[in-house]
Image (cartoon, rainbow, N blue to C red; front, side, top):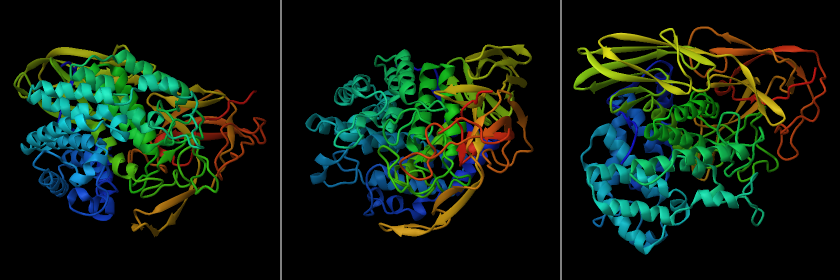
Length: 613
């Protein structure tokens, strides 16, 4: 097996600063309360109820468990254990783990098993519960026999590579060759996305019977698939980082959006700024990039993860994290119920902020994003410690038998300075790898210029040291087809549109929406039809920190010049901005506006035309 780095655990990593605050907000919001109020979690078949007994409980636990342990919240830990106890108690004598009868096994989509086994591995890493190994062993042994009789189908075939994560975890503990045979069998039975991409239309999934929905063009499947080469390499199966890079670049070329991800509502939907991208996909892509960063040891992958963590993810959840969108758009001046179809494969409520807009998978799954990102702020190298993300965090670990404490003190990405403090029980020599992002203009480490897009290495005997990283950034335009967007370092900037939140409380199919987990339509209360009238951009730091992704009080902004134009609305749907403006001819005088971080603006225009002088 081969992995450049390894992950630390919740015992060793603790988020700090704004990142810790975001996890606290999440725990007080939807993620920390689903088991109290959402039937598919509270009354799931996984815990003896009669509601959904497939992916939603494991999706939720995948984020809820590390969230509980990162925050050291004893009540949340107890609630997580109650679920894990019920799941373990439900395992059958032959090892079958999922909540269905023997008669239902043949038609049960085993994707839920892959996901639950991942969850049990997460739970072991957090709790060190010794029961987990035997449960995972019996379940995989049972699946080996079951799948020789019943080929993987549907979501299990589409997401076969996810099962390699618990297989690798178990193989590290029990070097039994049948586990490698199972991994090979899964690859043989699963979808080959490399071949499938040649069948995809380059702009959309192919239309069949009036629909554009396929497993192989599904945006969340693609987000998960991005780590396939990494998990194969970690298990000792041939895989290629170059292939992973080529595949990501291919998808972004045909479906990419401004934040480095790709559009899909739920399936591929092209590059236009008014197309949607699913929240589940953002959360899964973050995790895929983090796994790739760990296995391949390449700085680029945490660049990718940070772009999503600081832009796409916070943009599609409300500031209090009680509601979220299913689909977000780079240009969304309104989020209101549609009167005609706009999304290729999703419904009229997919871009509303709510409890479970369009479909409830994102309700359960979005909460893995920030906890797993926090667990990727440091990684373990064979010869030292890796500061893999520059977000605020702390680490307590042993290096060569010596206790070492590392603290990353910063308001990054909203500021350009990062201080890394290293304290040791006694002097100890090791290497400290500090990731220098590839999306900055330049950087200095303790006053000396260092290469961007790589790990700067500090090799010394540490005894109580302070290392200062300064990032050099300037706002710039990036071309987006016939439009442009503004980026600076990790952050994308958007023209904010003043929001009017209209609350809807109701019940549908036995699921209640009431404050704070109700639905909202967002209406524009300020002008949004603009084009950039100048290439001049000025960066400004704003006041003291209160909340990282505050709409009202963003920590930074970019001053720009704009003129009003006639943009217009798309033909389908209502109050959806056209993909490109109807006219670029100015219909107003030049105005000064302040662009704010994309993740702060729930209504926004991000991609605008650069008007002729």
